[in-house]
Structure formats: structure tokens, C-alpha cells
Image (cartoon, rainbow, N blue to C red):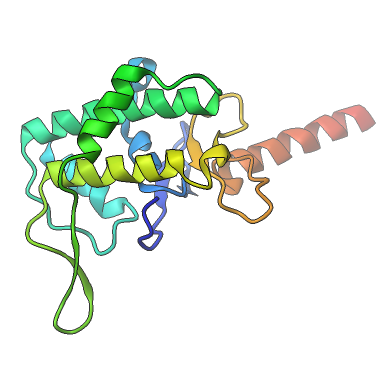
Length: 200
């Protein structure tokens, strides 16, 4: 998993309410940009500027200055869709789809973004990373997550109508919601209404 500082993502509910979502890993942040099948309607990675904007919102620190081609955006969408299917299978305890694993492993085998130290002691990214370097960084993060100590804690939000995926890195390991301020709060409100209905 990527160890860079957490920025967290700001997402919007179907009613337009903003809420913070921290999936806990760089590769899981990518899954919020769209996906295969029915998730294609949420697609936000249309061009290089969209992928650069995602990198800016991600947990990568500092924000990388990227040189991204249209082909690399298409490659990143393909990697994301493969990751989506692999992680969905993982959360269900099903075998990882072989073709999708090959796509993740192929991306991870390419050169990733390299961190460097500036003369003033600050962190930066070496050279000018490309979309391919970014994809390799995401894929390596996925390999680390899926083979690491928190692999058994990759979960889908417990809300029936939410499909966001996160890794629970809390000490007790009891996280159930994508965000307490969104799905967790909706659950509390429903439970309170149900209790009042029973009492009334």
C-alpha cells in the first residue's frame, strides 16, 4: 500500500451532498473514477487533464507534475477496470480473474514513479513521471495491498446501495461504512426512524 500522506477524496452523493471518503490505499482511490459495466456511467477519466486531476486529489504526496498521453489514459482505464474486477472478486472470496491479474501484474512490472529528495530536504518525484509510471505505481500499490497484512480487511461498504471499496486499517478492524458522515449517518437515521416507528 502507498505510504504517502493521506489526502482523502471528496465525493458527492446522488443528492449532491459532499462527503469525505478515505479508501485507505492509492489503488482503491482509482476505483472511484468509474469502472466496468454499470459503473461506466460514473467515468471521469476522459483525457490527460482528468487523470492529472485525479492524481492531484489522490494520496500521492507531493502532487506529481505528470506528462500523460491519451493512450495512457485509456491504459489507466483498462487497469482500473481490471483492478475493479480483481478487488470485487477478492471481497467476495472468489478466485481472482486470471486475465485481470495479468493486466495488474503487467502494469506493476513497468517502471513506477520514483521519489527523490530535493536539496532543501523535501520530497519530490524524480524526473517528469508519465501516465505509464503512474499506472505502475497504482498497480504496485494493488499488489502490496492484495498480498499484504490488510488483504483480509478489504471490504465493500455495508450500505446496500453503496459499492465503494476500502481497506480497514483501524486497530479494532470494525469499519463498516465508506464514510460515517455519509452511509454511516444514513444508517443511524434509518435505525432511529425504525425505533421511533416501533415505539409509536
